Length: 255
Image 1 (tube, rainbow, N blue to C red):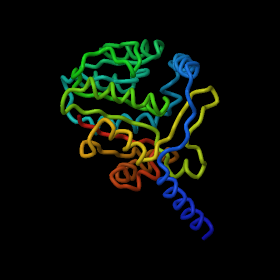
Image 2: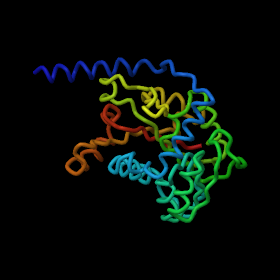
Image 3: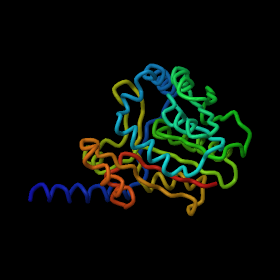
């Protein structure tokens, strides 16, 4: 009975927090950005392992599911890192441009598949407008400042063709994190992270895409029971309950 009461108490707390869309975020200085790039270079060889095999699998499957048909499409992987998404897209027939700020990560990415790599900032894309059929941006926006997110999304929309699709994933501030009060901060090595509430994420996207062209899902990852609960996770992802327990938000945005 005590556990049940605690669950509903935590659930109520989560919904109260969900009405508070904006929180004070630290101002990320130039040195913070340089540290982030240095950390990405340092982690490059072990990034996929550190991310977790099962979490990696869940996110990649969720992205591929929402991408639809893309054989022959020109796709930008904005913040490609070591190419865990880029390689899948290229292997399945897409023409992929993988862009990142970490040179070490791009070197690994280049070895994974036949694709083009570019060392550049997402906030200053070296492309003309209306170039890409699709854009993928996975687990990038939670590591930059609020102002930088808007600059990055402006650039994403600029290079998309009309009616093009963008798939964007960010950290979800799910119930488990609400209980731990772990919404944002710096990890032990200095990398900044921010967990989004669903209204906050949608309001951010609506500055660049119309409401009817935005669909947000939550990627569920019951990592302690990966094999027993795989089917349950797939079912949960189709209902709102996933926003309370999902590890990531995934947005489909049409231009």
